[in-house]
Length: 377
Image (tube, rainbow, N blue to C red):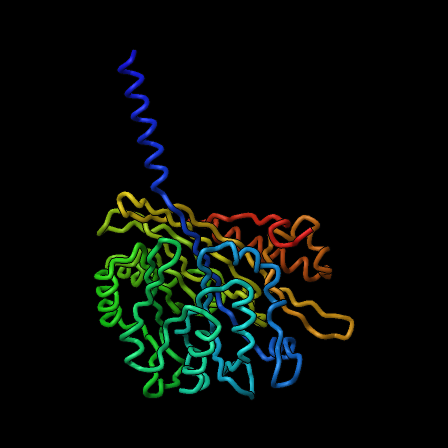
């Protein structure tokens, strides 16, 4: 009897010790942050001088701020001076960075097909503006020396060490002007970058890819092949952007490590003025990491998506206001709090239904957001 008591005491103490050695980290990713001309006009306070973007993200900001690290794909340039414009060569006010930072974002990746829209000045000023607002930033660089010093991007936060890499398929035919650098999808270069990351040995390695075919709901074979290759060469998580629509979330069996990895092929649009089918929204993706400090092992313990719809509200004067809206918080009658017109309610519900059905065919798991999470009483 005494022996049994000692065994139970040992097992209980051991379980407590194991649990005490576990620490957790929440990553959050969103899709394309875009600024078309109507959005710039809507944010304008003083023409060519002052812009308000904080209100655009007020309904998602509480969710963003709960993450240990929130990451966005900045698919515009910040040239630092007017003229500001939308498609086809995006040039946005620096106040956009201010609004994103205030809303809770910690990192912006900048390697995408619009990286060179404002030339060398745009690449440099985008980097400097983001860093001046306190963002982690990667994917584009002012020169080779900066890339050599700060790539891969290693983030040390809350007892976790995370590695980030970012690449794009191209830059719409606009050449990268010396000495700036835009990371392109080149497997020879990526293999070297991943090898260096593996030597640093972060707790988790995240590769963010700007890839795929625009407006296609299913990922291409090229995306699948490249995903398998990335995992084989050391990536733990692959996050995708560019198609402007939501593509599948899939668990990927890693043949090399015999563990499961996760790929999010495309998160769609976080905020934009696009009107093509399926482009009026996207998803936020939450990734929970767990680390055993005793064994120094880290794994992905939970993943979930949150549908986000782009809501355009017109005031009495006809001025537009753009909002990123977490759908589940404003369903079942709660949409009246946003003063939505019938057409808007119908569009939001249609987007949510299609997104849920689409991701439900694969490995997507939705996290339902309660209204109390995003609106104070």
